[in-house]
Length: 507
Image (cartoon, rainbow, N blue to C red; front, side, top):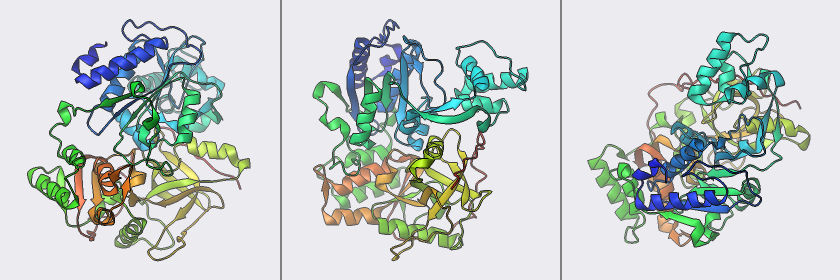
């Protein structure tokens, strides 16, 4: 066992050893660091499941570091390097940009599931720089790239491990070195998937085709994907392949937000009792707030979490109204949610461009202003490694009591967006924000309706997912009121993109 396992709880250590045994059977020995070439068939699928705070991410990070120390190559979504028949690879995936960025903030080089399916094609000249940075080639000599520029690229890569970011540090634009995108044709090796409770059956089957050795990390208390009848892909795995973490590890033991999340597992706790627990926690700890109104200033970066669509639409309408947003335009700084890409088959390449840059369904986006062409928007994709894009956009603003959304502007085809000042709890899965506002009146309605999902009261599953989205502070909003903004919407807090990229769709 690696030295990192010495700090594990008993169930974490047992899960580590079981996964190490699986990897050893696949030819990757974490104890000795010995690697043998990949074998046909692989070792199958294993899952690590546990509630929030049980140490799933800690275990995933420790396994990643052990595999890296053993010499396994980490495959990212931006560069794969030369393929060698005998090399062993690891890809760490998450269903959304935001979920992947949460892992990257913890030092784990994660990418989205979609991004690993489509890989960039590099200009051959600049691919030499990428190979050198990845340790697979000599320092190149390239016309127009100075020694100082190469040094900047190397310094950036050693700190951030991003090939596009390093090339941008050398003064290159994305359009200089990425000439297109191609769907992955060959399978990979070892795959870690975080937030696996969000996977549907089709995604699971796709991942099993790509990764002969697949390890899922998920929370069984979250909401199952839509159309999954309350089940998650790891529910059907046999007991030996499903490892459960029960203990809440030490650094989370005094977290009042996690205490509330785990209180939901008590069958004696009804909605009234739970709200009493929230109020008591708020009196003891500032990390829980008993809020009398929705704070509009938070909504631009951290959406209010609701159960019902009607509530979501009313909150969005109120958010735009207090900011004085006109009906026929968006303000810079307004939050959006990507609802998909509407393009015909003949524009498949453009679709890949947009999706590979982070505009996948559910992506959180900040509107930066109009693009250079009618219907185009400049956008910042939250959680994407290269967040700035310009894309043909269709923006839909839903209004209370109106069946059809209002469309302030639209390209003929392109990425479609809904407003993101409020989102349903289902759509919030896989994301985390520093401060999270949960609209409690919606959950009270769910409790009164008495609905269940997978044998549990629906309101409890909704509440569990909603409050565990909070990284630092939970705001439990108990009244249908909205505060006034303290200032206008802003965009100066968004970091600049390392690779400026303009993506256009010709129609």
